[in-house]
Image 1: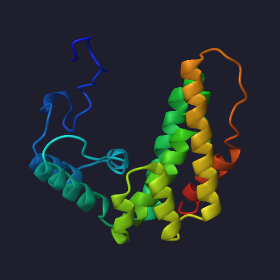
Image 2: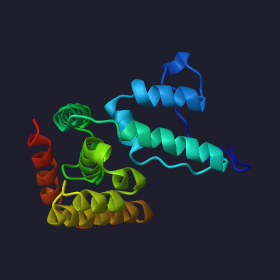
Image 3: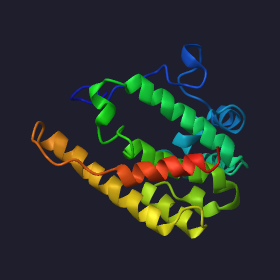
Length: 200
């Protein structure tokens, strides 16, 4: 809450142990959950997580837990299968809704681009500290190219498509209802599909 009211809504159901669990976790409980119980979609969020408040000791502990959780060895084909299943379920839930063709959810849109990056991080972080140190999509794309997991040409397409989609979302927010050309996301969608299928 701020003097002007609520800054943003918080869904308190989204916590590790559901409504029955505590609203906040200790660092020990956070470590236990991330290292032994976290689902793939939760680890996807951890790929982008960074400490933005608190003392230096807490930030260091968070960073250590994050590194340890992300650097656990994983089978890439298992991560691919889980991401493909989640994406298919997401598409079914969005079918027929207005947001299905938004810059975020359209094939090759922001979700697909982020999931390509998260797949690479989760699959290869065990052998690359550089992947874990990066928390931005552009930085992670660079790191994935550096370790040879992603072709430089594919990274350029994903980076440019993401930039254009973010710009489109910003313009839709600032000038709603104005007709404008859509972003061609077909190449990004092809990369997403190809990377998921190469291990399934």
